[in-house]
Length: 333
Image 1 (tube, rainbow, N blue to C red):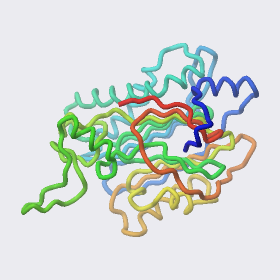
Image 2: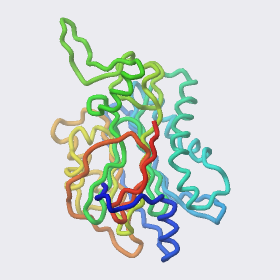
Image 3: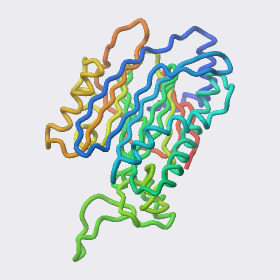
Image 4: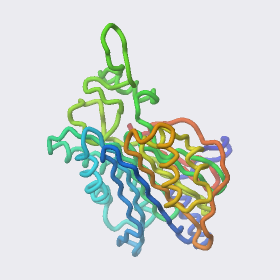
């Protein structure tokens, strides 16, 4: 979410240094829950809190939440779950201080996604996977995503923010243009006699996503380069939901947040999955991760509902939800 033009562009590193200079800010308390109903057995998750590492200025911790929704088998999802984090961390230079480490994350995530895809394709397996990968360092959240497993955040002040991109060709005009401009084709499945059925797909291959890891059999137009968004949260905290398309095909962001309001994360995740499968039954793997990001001194408290911000871009974004102002945007294609 961005406000009017009176807010000036401020690099995230500068914003962090200003806050640290003015007062000591305690890291948030992280409480998470997970729920999943399996239909095909192709959804996998990675939940790691209190990951400790040595930096140039001492020890610090971070948390990682990943959702991997496989297709055409589970091999790509399993491989990505097991290797992506190490590939991302390996792309960050050694001996950085905390602020430098956070600033290096967006490009390290891009490098990690690309390396994971390259290494998996050498295994000559045709499986693919969506990825939504969240690294939480203090009050800074960095999200990298390919595919349609989406991540939203509701601040304690009530604003709803989309932290990932939806790379389904059906709803992403920019991705359709990217593919056709590169020589690919976008269209529906031809059922014969001029009839077209199903969602928009990329040809050759027929995948309905424009970005993923794996999918070596669908051609050069499906890329592993993620959409990356980095935000500085208000110290009031909020709730983050990461879910596979089994949830978002049934619920809007507001519906997902409202159906679990007042519940702890584990119960909230279970309620969201329950609400998602209720209308039509379990038709796909349906997975939900709920993460409450809380001030250390305050108990869990969920914000009131508020309408979400619409729209996607294909840039790396740096933003702050401290004052709901847009901080910096760097094109990455």
